[in-house]
Image (cartoon, rainbow, N blue to C red):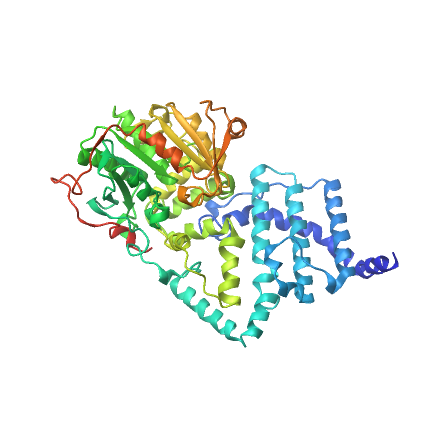
Length: 583
């Protein structure tokens, strides 16, 4: 007891300063509710640098009930007093950044980490305790999480015990290598997440055999060589997201969804988006629907000679594909026998963490900046998505590359993640306002696209809808919401893991699980749906393959050549030159 009292007495001189700091901390959190989100609005300009017309008039109103604040203060004082009592015997717990042996054997580093964790817990507690609207609270949480990630002692050579030990063990070589890594990343313009020199598109990623059979200024259409003697009569078209390269669906032969569809006996076509340059700076959402998605659908029909096709859209590709099908439905066309949507938003009511970036001020600023023309640089979006998981996708590599002088190992998925694509400004701002901000795509006849009033309710065809349980880009509830919009026969499947790992999960790996509800009921929420679903081990691909075969028609001899031997022939080998263009 005496020792504990001594610790408290020693801490007393700091108590008044800490108490005075609570008001400043609350004010800082209040500022962060706006600035923290704006600083990451697509890698864009922080709010304080925006033109006056684009700024919010007032900060959001926030407060903390006195009893909540008192409880947080008391908890902080108690934990801080205990840390002060333990001094250099304090140890950080429960965080993998400080789990290494070097942290435990360096008292100063361990103490700094323990203090950092206490401060972080306290600020998160304040963010949770405030009385404010949900978006403001979410922005505060995000701002605190960004601060915590950026200010970690592990990010500083002065406090990172592991980096210090490595510098001593290598006689400074790790520091020299870290400086080389930093200079390399400055020259290339982005943080290295993998050894990019180990990969080349068309050589050891995107290697499934095929050919380009059509191209225009927006996309190339790839056709893949059949791997079976017979194919189904209805061809299969994949529409990937235009904010990434298509070869996420064809990384390696063993995890390629494209090759898997080939092996199942489908005649496979894929849209390979052009990486926009200044010649596409004025391209619009309508351009991408009419001249890309609808064009691709008609091309596959014409090349194959089939009146109907099966189509798949992934992420934004699913939104584009569904919009195109709705436009065609308004024109009296029904070109698809079925549609598959992977981690796709149609109803943007629940956009998860991305909602903190979107409000009228941000959208208006982007429209002013890019709505009449220009390009959104690919690395802006890539940075935004990385900062959604800053410890794993940013600071982990800062520490490894620069403080420890390590070269990240080759990893095809992270190579693809670093291969960014630009977006035309008018396309991007239309998408931002009409989907994320105003959610008009989910409202019948609220949008006019390509001259047609669109209603997703007209897409009356069988639909396979997939969502990933831990997806932070398209939350599982957002993916499930499509079941409430599409009127045809539906099958919803939830997979484990996140936006990419949940989708790219080949059966041979025998990893993860998926959930299916067999009674055909689709209650209003995903949580209600899950209550009646059963877990199945392994990949969802086999379930989807069986479903797709039921809509593929009879089998016919596989074509011997690419295209149709008439108007459409092989232009160049897959994956084509469009996908090789770097942002």
